[in-house]
Image 1 (cartoon, rainbow, N blue to C red):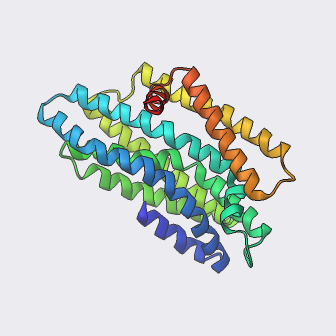
Image 2 (image 1 turned 90 degrees about the vertical axis):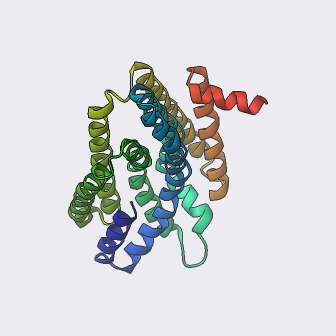
Length: 265
């Protein structure tokens, strides 16, 4: 991901210094959920996955990878949806002052919305690569990452001609989905199907909860559109969190139930 970010920045330089700044502001938001959830889940999972391989229990390894995918998705998906629907409010709350005006807020918010499409895939890459490492395969994630970088850079270069910095963000999304798709396919060939019906159902619950939460958030923002931008950001995040948490809990998502049990302790 670091290489892709560098390439994105170099491509943005072709559009002018303003595009580079716009991209960097958006990337500050983009990296947060990936670092908090994707990288942390992968770091915690590696010792367990390695032990499963040592025990020669590939079914347990497959199950742990599937659970990791579900957990990452549960926390990252709402972040991506929040960036998509609350991008200008979040950007404006943190950066809109002095020379950074409302036009800059709208521009960075649009690029952040484009980056939000990449976040669900980018957050899963580290976990899937960790599955390969646990099996002693260090080559597969490398050649897949190389292919993804080429796809990302090519797509970004083509899209930025019409869409500017947002096109670069969309190119990053294309590369991320190629990366995660190839990693999942190769890991499945070694372990079998990574996600069974219950895992797919849980992913569907997360997606449905995000859709409901996003709709509620848009409604709240429309209702208080005359309020200060920081008020819109806070109220929007609260609406997103409460609706997503409530919906996934009502639909029986295991991670929502786990969080509820933790809060009750």
